[in-house]
Length: 67
Image (cartoon, rainbow, N blue to C red; front, top):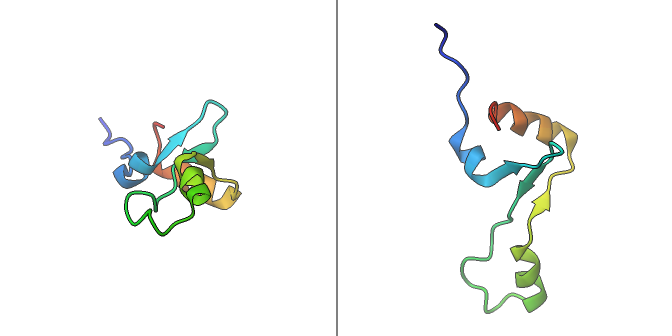
């Protein structure tokens, strides 16, 4: 019986695969020191974002074999 593929846990904690196969993540930078950031910027940091760079998506999907 073979070993099987391992998931990169650091990637698994930061990125989620959507149903259409894109990668979704929440940007960092909102946990502290928010008082000197613009309110609009803090609001935008709450939203999830999708990765558009195809090379990066390909690399990250390889890190999430059972994603």
